[in-house]
Length: 387
Ligand SMILES: Cc1ncc(COP(=O)(O)O)c(C=O)c1O
Image (cartoon, rainbow, N blue to C red; front, side):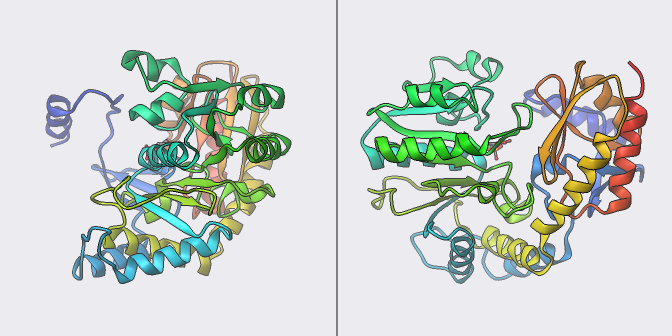
C-alpha cells in the first residue's frame, strides 16, 4: 500500500517538488499522522497555512455546512458569507475598507502589482533582496532569488531590488516612475529577517512623498503568526495595500488584497478571479476569524513565541549562529547547511522547514501547546548538540 502510493505519485507528479517519503493521512491540532499511525509534530503547518492546526472542529463544521448550501458563486452576484467576511476583515485593519478576494498568496501579489500600476499610471516596482512573493510572472519578477527567476527570464520589466533594511538604498530607488514598493514585514523564505521599524517608517514616508504606493506582503506573517493579527500592527504605519493568504480560510485556498482609498481606478473588468470570494472559502474564513476572536489566537502566539524564543536562546550548541523571529515565526540560523538537521528532526518525528540554505524555519500551528513546544526545543537541543 505504502509503496503503491509513493510509486503512483512519483509516476504522475509534475516533478517540481522535492518529495519526502512520508505519507500523511490525518491531522489534529499541531500533529499529523502517517499511514502507519506514527505521530509527527508539525512545525511546517503546510508552510504557514494551518495556523489553527489541523481538523479544527469549528472550521470543518463551517465547511461541511456551507458545502450543503452553496459552494461557488462568481463575485458579480452578492452572497451572505462573502459580505460578512468583507465586513469582518475590514474591521481588523481600520483604514482599509476595500478587499479583492482571490485564491493564493501569489494571486494577491499579482493583483496588488496590477492595481499599483493602474492606480498610479506608473510602471516601476521596488522590491527587496532576499524577498519572496510567489512564482507567477509578476510575483516572480518581485522575488529576488536567482534560483527561482533565471530559468524563466525574461521576466516583467520595471522591477528593482534593493537591500532590505537599508534606508539610503530605498531613498535612491524610489523615483517619480515608481508605482509601488513591495516588502515583507519579516522576510520568511529569505531567512526569517524582521524589518527594522525605522525602515518601514521610512518606506511609508518616501512612498507618500513621492506618490508611490506601499504594498506589504503579509502572506506568511498574517493571521496571528507574529503575535498580532497582522505583523504590520507591530509598527505604527498603514500601507496602501496588504496582501494576505495562507491561513485566511484555514486551509481552503484563499487570498486577498486589502486596500485603502489611495488605490484608485479599480473599475469593473480590470481584474477578476473565477474562484475568488467563493462562499465555501468565505465561510471557512469566517470560522477562522471567529476562533481567532474567541481564543485570542494572536495573544497566544505572542506568549508561546516568547516562551519558545527564551528556551531556544538557552540551547548551547556550537552550530547555532543566531535565533531570530517574532511570535511563532522563528528562524534558527546555523553555521552549516540545514538539510541534514531537518532530516534528523524528521527522524525524531518533528517536521520543520528551511529558509534559505542555513536557517531552520519554525512555523508551528499557533494552537501548539506548551508540552509540544518543550518537545520541539528538547529535540532541537539533541539534534544540534554536536558539530
Ligand atoms: C511572503 C510570501 N509571499 C507570497 C507567497 C506565495 O504564496 P502562495 O504560495 O500562496 O502563492 C509566499 C509563499 O510562501 C510567501 O511566503
